[in-house]
Each structure stands twice: as structure tokens, then as C-alpha cells.
Image (cartoon, rainbow, N blue to C red; front, side, top):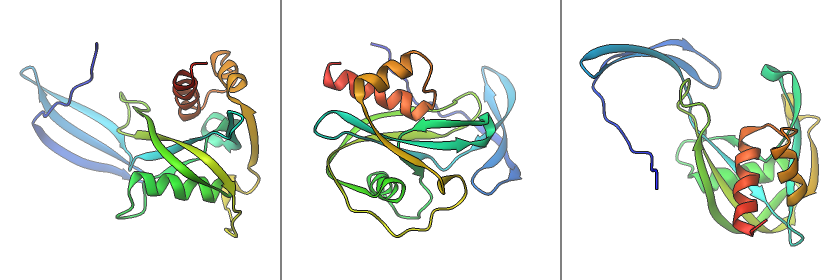
Length: 185
């Protein structure tokens, strides 16, 4: 079975060439097969996402505007690993509550993936949340989150939408496919 493996290459130079609000752009020089290669990439803090399934195997989706692609995307609750000392699971719980008002009693690892390994170092860990209860929240959402729509969608319909390229958020696509596989759909 194919399995990715870590590599430890000698980095001869590393510099931040752009500092952004959420992520930076780095330029690194490294030795590879006897040559020095220079690559620029987005240095990302990482993220978490949540496939929240209710007892009817409906997945909790959010619809949010994403400016770089100029679309309202159906996504799963997700967010950055940007709170010092917070574990990935704690971040997933926080994001589920902040974006949807739901909490879950049951949590398990679902899948982890690199979003765009040729251009950034972002890794997203997706958790499966079950036994959900709407608690609500009093958070004041900002930016593109102010008009987010939340919907429960049968997992088989979400899977069909992913496979028809009608739902293209990478964390939603990977998460829905992994959850459907886990459920035998």
C-alpha cells in the first residue's frame, strides 16, 4: 500500500518574503540530489474541520462566500490552528460551536490531508462529530461569516454533489468522501 513518508532535507536558506494577516510567504533554498533548489510557498498554521453527522446521517454544512474563487461554497465547519496551546481536537470543538452553535458528545479522527502541497504547507485534520446538540452561541461573527447559512444535508446527497463537482471545497469533499466510506455509502 502506498504511504507518504517524511523527508529531512538540508535547508541552506529560509526567509519570510511576505508577512500576511493569516499566513506568510516563505522562500527556502534546499539541497536536492546534488543541486540547490529554491521554492516559495505559503507558510500556513494548519487547520481543522468537522464532519458533524446527526442520527439520520445528515451532515451539517455551512454556505460561505470565498473571495479568491468568487463563490459561495458549501463547506464543513473549519478553522485555523491559531490559538497557542490549543490541541487540534479542541480547535475542532471550538470551530463547530462558533460556526454552527452545535456541540458534540462523540469525537473521532476521520482523515488528515495536505491541501496544496506544491504551494503551501497547510495540513487539515478532519474530525467526525456525532451525538450533536444545538447549544447556540452569542459570538459576534465577522466578515464572510456574518451571513453564513447552515443546513443539514443527507450524506448520500452531499457525496453525490461532491462527485458531480457541485461542491468543491476541499475539506468538505475529502471529509464527505471519508465519512461516506466509513458509513459504507
